[in-house]
Image (cartoon, rainbow, N blue to C red; front, side, top):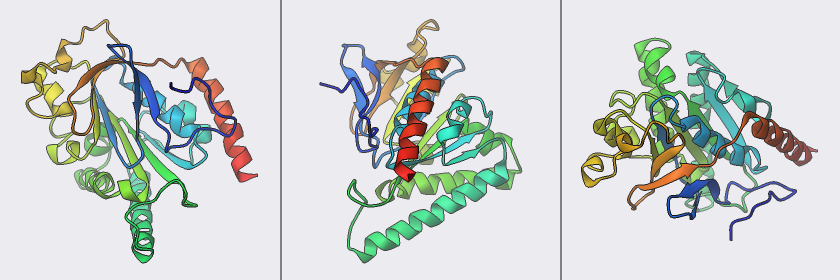
Length: 268
Protein backbone atom coordinates (compact mmCIF):
# COMPACT_ATOMS: atom_id res chain seq x y z
CA UNK A 1 0.00 0.00 0.00
CA UNK A 2 1.29 3.46 -0.89
CA UNK A 3 2.34 5.69 1.99
CA UNK A 4 -0.16 8.44 2.80
CA UNK A 5 2.13 10.47 5.06
CA UNK A 6 5.55 12.02 4.64
CA UNK A 7 8.29 10.71 6.98
CA UNK A 8 9.60 13.28 9.45
CA UNK A 9 13.00 13.09 7.79
CA UNK A 10 11.45 13.63 4.36
CA UNK A 11 11.15 11.44 1.29
CA UNK A 12 13.94 10.13 -0.90
CA UNK A 13 14.34 10.59 -4.63
CA UNK A 14 14.83 6.81 -4.67
CA UNK A 15 11.19 6.49 -3.52
CA UNK A 16 8.43 6.36 -6.16
CA UNK A 17 6.94 9.73 -7.15
CA UNK A 18 3.15 9.91 -6.83
CA UNK A 19 1.46 11.58 -9.81
CA UNK A 20 -2.22 10.67 -9.45
CA UNK A 21 -4.46 7.73 -10.35
CA UNK A 22 -5.05 5.61 -13.44
CA UNK A 23 -8.56 5.33 -14.80
CA UNK A 24 -8.85 1.88 -13.19
CA UNK A 25 -8.30 3.45 -9.77
CA UNK A 26 -4.73 2.32 -9.17
CA UNK A 27 -2.18 4.90 -8.09
CA UNK A 28 0.35 6.33 -10.51
CA UNK A 29 3.68 5.97 -8.73
CA UNK A 30 6.73 6.20 -10.96
CA UNK A 31 10.39 5.58 -10.24
CA UNK A 32 12.06 8.72 -11.48
CA UNK A 33 15.57 7.92 -10.31
CA UNK A 34 17.81 7.12 -13.32
CA UNK A 35 15.07 8.35 -15.65
CA UNK A 36 13.75 11.56 -17.24
CA UNK A 37 10.22 12.79 -17.94
CA UNK A 38 8.64 15.03 -20.56
CA UNK A 39 5.26 16.72 -20.00
CA UNK A 40 3.39 18.59 -22.74
CA UNK A 41 -0.10 19.73 -23.65
CA UNK A 42 -2.14 22.75 -24.60
CA UNK A 43 -2.50 25.69 -22.14
CA UNK A 44 -4.88 24.90 -19.30
CA UNK A 45 -4.75 21.13 -19.82
CA UNK A 46 -3.08 20.47 -16.46
CA UNK A 47 0.61 20.22 -17.34
CA UNK A 48 1.63 22.58 -14.53
CA UNK A 49 -0.27 20.46 -12.00
CA UNK A 50 1.70 17.39 -13.04
CA UNK A 51 4.93 19.36 -12.90
CA UNK A 52 4.17 20.59 -9.38
CA UNK A 53 3.65 17.02 -8.14
CA UNK A 54 7.12 16.09 -9.33
CA UNK A 55 8.73 19.22 -7.88
CA UNK A 56 6.88 18.65 -4.58
CA UNK A 57 8.41 15.20 -4.25
CA UNK A 58 11.84 16.57 -5.10
CA UNK A 59 11.54 19.41 -2.61
CA UNK A 60 10.77 16.94 0.18
CA UNK A 61 13.89 14.86 -0.57
CA UNK A 62 16.96 15.82 1.49
CA UNK A 63 19.05 13.69 -0.89
CA UNK A 64 18.16 15.86 -3.89
CA UNK A 65 19.40 19.17 -5.24
CA UNK A 66 16.63 21.10 -7.01
CA UNK A 67 17.56 23.19 -10.06
CA UNK A 68 14.59 25.12 -11.48
CA UNK A 69 14.44 26.85 -14.88
CA UNK A 70 11.28 28.90 -15.38
CA UNK A 71 11.12 31.34 -18.27
CA UNK A 72 7.83 32.78 -16.95
CA UNK A 73 9.00 32.73 -13.31
CA UNK A 74 5.47 32.11 -11.97
CA UNK A 75 4.97 28.38 -12.62
CA UNK A 76 7.87 27.23 -10.45
CA UNK A 77 8.26 30.46 -8.50
CA UNK A 78 6.44 29.13 -5.43
CA UNK A 79 9.25 26.58 -4.98
CA UNK A 80 12.02 29.13 -5.30
CA UNK A 81 12.72 29.24 -1.56
CA UNK A 82 13.72 25.57 -1.46
CA UNK A 83 15.51 25.45 -4.82
CA UNK A 84 19.29 25.17 -4.93
CA UNK A 85 19.22 27.19 -8.15
CA UNK A 86 16.48 29.21 -9.80
CA UNK A 87 16.87 30.56 -13.34
CA UNK A 88 14.28 32.96 -14.74
CA UNK A 89 14.02 34.45 -18.25
CA UNK A 90 17.77 34.73 -18.75
CA UNK A 91 19.22 32.59 -21.53
CA UNK A 92 22.84 33.38 -20.64
CA UNK A 93 22.34 32.29 -17.04
CA UNK A 94 20.49 29.20 -18.23
CA UNK A 95 23.41 28.23 -20.50
CA UNK A 96 25.92 28.79 -17.71
CA UNK A 97 23.88 26.56 -15.40
CA UNK A 98 23.62 23.77 -17.98
CA UNK A 99 27.37 23.96 -18.62
CA UNK A 100 27.96 23.60 -14.86
CA UNK A 101 25.70 20.56 -14.85
CA UNK A 102 27.54 19.06 -17.80
CA UNK A 103 30.88 19.54 -16.01
CA UNK A 104 29.44 17.98 -12.82
CA UNK A 105 28.11 15.05 -14.84
CA UNK A 106 31.54 14.45 -16.36
CA UNK A 107 33.16 14.69 -12.91
CA UNK A 108 30.75 12.09 -11.52
CA UNK A 109 31.41 9.71 -14.40
CA UNK A 110 35.14 10.05 -13.88
CA UNK A 111 34.66 9.07 -10.22
CA UNK A 112 32.37 6.16 -11.12
CA UNK A 113 34.97 4.95 -13.58
CA UNK A 114 37.66 5.21 -10.89
CA UNK A 115 35.71 3.00 -8.48
CA UNK A 116 34.48 0.71 -11.31
CA UNK A 117 30.80 1.49 -10.89
CA UNK A 118 28.12 2.09 -13.53
CA UNK A 119 25.81 4.45 -11.61
CA UNK A 120 25.31 6.16 -8.29
CA UNK A 121 22.93 4.72 -5.71
CA UNK A 122 21.23 5.73 -2.46
CA UNK A 123 24.27 4.79 -0.39
CA UNK A 124 26.55 7.33 -2.10
CA UNK A 125 27.24 10.56 -0.16
CA UNK A 126 26.16 12.69 -3.10
CA UNK A 127 22.89 14.38 -3.96
CA UNK A 128 20.86 13.53 -7.02
CA UNK A 129 20.20 16.64 -9.10
CA UNK A 130 16.71 17.26 -10.50
CA UNK A 131 16.66 19.73 -13.39
CA UNK A 132 13.14 21.10 -13.94
CA UNK A 133 12.48 23.21 -17.05
CA UNK A 134 9.23 25.08 -17.68
CA UNK A 135 8.59 26.40 -20.38
CA UNK A 136 11.07 24.55 -22.62
CA UNK A 137 10.17 26.56 -25.73
CA UNK A 138 11.13 29.86 -24.12
CA UNK A 139 14.74 28.70 -23.77
CA UNK A 140 14.98 26.66 -26.96
CA UNK A 141 13.09 28.86 -29.44
CA UNK A 142 12.18 32.29 -28.05
CA UNK A 143 14.83 33.93 -25.85
CA UNK A 144 18.31 34.87 -27.01
CA UNK A 145 19.95 34.33 -30.36
CA UNK A 146 19.56 31.30 -32.59
CA UNK A 147 23.04 30.14 -31.60
CA UNK A 148 22.13 30.38 -27.90
CA UNK A 149 18.89 28.48 -28.46
CA UNK A 150 20.72 25.72 -30.34
CA UNK A 151 23.37 25.55 -27.63
CA UNK A 152 20.64 25.19 -24.99
CA UNK A 153 19.12 22.24 -26.88
CA UNK A 154 22.55 20.60 -27.35
CA UNK A 155 23.39 20.87 -23.67
CA UNK A 156 19.94 19.64 -22.63
CA UNK A 157 20.12 16.67 -25.01
CA UNK A 158 23.50 15.71 -23.55
CA UNK A 159 22.14 15.85 -19.99
CA UNK A 160 19.08 13.77 -20.91
CA UNK A 161 21.19 11.25 -22.82
CA UNK A 162 24.04 10.82 -20.34
CA UNK A 163 22.93 12.22 -17.00
CA UNK A 164 20.79 9.41 -15.61
CA UNK A 165 23.48 7.10 -14.23
CA UNK A 166 25.30 10.12 -12.81
CA UNK A 167 22.21 11.07 -10.80
CA UNK A 168 20.94 13.91 -12.97
CA UNK A 169 17.19 13.78 -13.67
CA UNK A 170 15.67 16.07 -16.31
CA UNK A 171 12.01 17.09 -16.02
CA UNK A 172 10.93 19.18 -19.02
CA UNK A 173 7.54 20.73 -19.78
CA UNK A 174 6.16 22.72 -22.69
CA UNK A 175 2.90 24.02 -24.15
CA UNK A 176 4.26 24.02 -27.69
CA UNK A 177 3.98 20.54 -29.20
CA UNK A 178 5.88 21.06 -32.45
CA UNK A 179 8.78 19.06 -33.85
CA UNK A 180 11.12 22.05 -33.68
CA UNK A 181 10.52 22.32 -29.90
CA UNK A 182 10.49 18.57 -29.18
CA UNK A 183 12.68 16.99 -31.89
CA UNK A 184 12.54 13.20 -32.12
CA UNK A 185 16.20 12.93 -31.13
CA UNK A 186 15.38 14.61 -27.81
CA UNK A 187 11.91 13.17 -27.18
CA UNK A 188 13.01 9.57 -27.56
CA UNK A 189 15.54 10.00 -24.75
CA UNK A 190 12.79 10.57 -22.17
CA UNK A 191 11.81 7.34 -20.40
CA UNK A 192 8.48 8.85 -19.32
CA UNK A 193 6.26 11.03 -21.49
CA UNK A 194 2.99 12.63 -20.38
CA UNK A 195 0.64 13.95 -23.04
CA UNK A 196 -2.11 16.24 -21.77
CA UNK A 197 -4.89 17.43 -24.07
CA UNK A 198 -3.63 18.39 -27.54
CA UNK A 199 -5.46 19.98 -30.44
CA UNK A 200 -4.42 17.38 -33.05
CA UNK A 201 -3.42 13.74 -33.20
CA UNK A 202 -0.07 14.76 -34.72
CA UNK A 203 0.65 16.93 -31.67
CA UNK A 204 -0.11 13.93 -29.47
CA UNK A 205 2.34 11.81 -31.45
CA UNK A 206 5.03 14.48 -31.14
CA UNK A 207 4.87 13.94 -27.36
CA UNK A 208 4.27 10.19 -27.09
CA UNK A 209 5.95 8.98 -30.26
CA UNK A 210 4.96 8.38 -33.85
CA UNK A 211 2.08 5.99 -34.42
CA UNK A 212 0.46 5.93 -31.00
CA UNK A 213 -2.52 8.04 -32.11
CA UNK A 214 -3.36 5.60 -34.91
CA UNK A 215 -3.42 2.84 -32.28
CA UNK A 216 -6.03 4.71 -30.26
CA UNK A 217 -3.72 6.52 -27.83
CA UNK A 218 -4.51 10.08 -28.84
CA UNK A 219 -4.37 12.98 -26.37
CA UNK A 220 -6.53 15.10 -28.71
CA UNK A 221 -9.44 12.89 -27.64
CA UNK A 222 -9.19 14.18 -24.07
CA UNK A 223 -12.16 16.52 -23.54
CA UNK A 224 -11.43 20.20 -22.75
CA UNK A 225 -13.20 19.89 -19.37
CA UNK A 226 -10.98 16.96 -18.35
CA UNK A 227 -8.22 19.11 -16.89
CA UNK A 228 -5.40 17.10 -15.40
CA UNK A 229 -6.14 14.02 -17.52
CA UNK A 230 -3.16 12.74 -19.49
CA UNK A 231 -1.74 9.74 -21.30
CA UNK A 232 1.37 8.47 -19.53
CA UNK A 233 3.89 6.43 -21.49
CA UNK A 234 6.56 4.55 -19.55
CA UNK A 235 9.60 2.78 -20.95
CA UNK A 236 8.63 -0.40 -22.77
CA UNK A 237 4.92 0.04 -22.09
CA UNK A 238 1.85 1.50 -23.73
CA UNK A 239 0.23 4.87 -22.89
CA UNK A 240 -2.20 4.70 -19.96
CA UNK A 241 -4.91 7.25 -19.22
CA UNK A 242 -4.54 8.88 -15.80
CA UNK A 243 -5.73 11.82 -13.72
CA UNK A 244 -3.11 14.02 -12.12
CA UNK A 245 -3.29 14.72 -8.39
CA UNK A 246 -4.14 18.39 -7.76
CA UNK A 247 -2.11 20.71 -5.56
CA UNK A 248 -3.55 24.13 -4.71
CA UNK A 249 -1.32 27.12 -4.02
CA UNK A 250 -2.12 26.66 -0.32
CA UNK A 251 -0.90 23.07 -0.51
CA UNK A 252 2.31 24.23 -2.19
CA UNK A 253 2.94 26.94 0.42
CA UNK A 254 2.57 24.34 3.19
CA UNK A 255 4.85 21.88 1.38
CA UNK A 256 7.48 24.57 0.80
CA UNK A 257 7.53 25.40 4.52
CA UNK A 258 7.85 21.71 5.42
CA UNK A 259 10.54 21.20 2.79
CA UNK A 260 12.44 24.22 4.14
CA UNK A 261 12.44 22.70 7.62
CA UNK A 262 13.64 19.33 6.33
CA UNK A 263 16.43 20.92 4.34
CA UNK A 264 17.43 23.14 7.26
CA UNK A 265 17.82 20.07 9.47
CA UNK A 266 19.99 18.48 6.80
CA UNK A 267 22.49 21.35 6.80
CA UNK A 268 22.42 21.95 10.59
